[in-house]
Image (cartoon, rainbow, N blue to C red; front, side, top):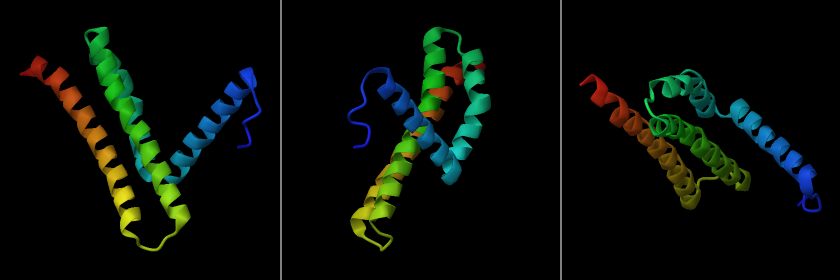
Length: 123
């Protein structure tokens, strides 16, 4: 590990830099991540505006932020599996499918959260 001897603030700065590299790489190479980020841009302020209480705002915004977080993990799993090899293997396919299912469930969570908070106001 190249960063194991770094301590204090330097470690925090390095970790931040590595995190930004990861976000940039995911945005550059993963279409789904780009789409989710582009949806976040209008939806985050909308969630802050539509939430009537701090808890509602936290739920609306938090449910949205979970989607790209899970997409980052999905992309990391896919990159790792692809690094091992591109040949078809049942366990590789299963790992990718399970990670994809996690993204799907995070999207369902966001939709259900928004629906449960906002639909009763308009029904």
